[in-house]
Image 1: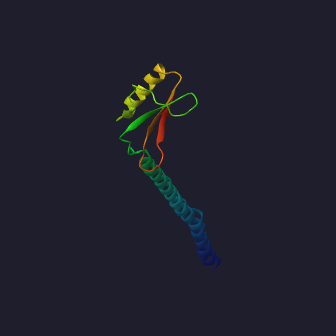
Image 2: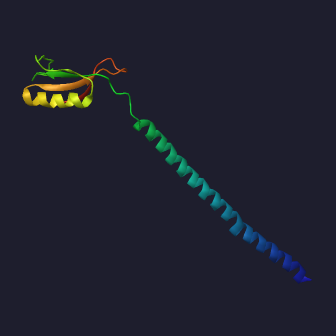
Length: 125
């Protein structure tokens, strides 16, 4: 008679040990592993998307100007030099040449952008 009472208790306790010791913790760990992977993947995708938006080419100015400045930092005018350019590289090249030719002057490469009221300085030597 005791055997018929003890066997169901032992089998039920074994069932509870397996249920709460292996099955439920295994399901919870699997869920959190998948959830962790999903969070890491979504964070990486959000980072890549925001980087792509920041790294895309912005609207570049159409015209560049070279402004000569004297040793006191005031705008000056030098006759015979070209100051209006269409591309940044050409303006930068001319600005380096002017710096060698006129060592007592500084030069600023500026352009008018749509968002600002003042000219934006791109290079200064």
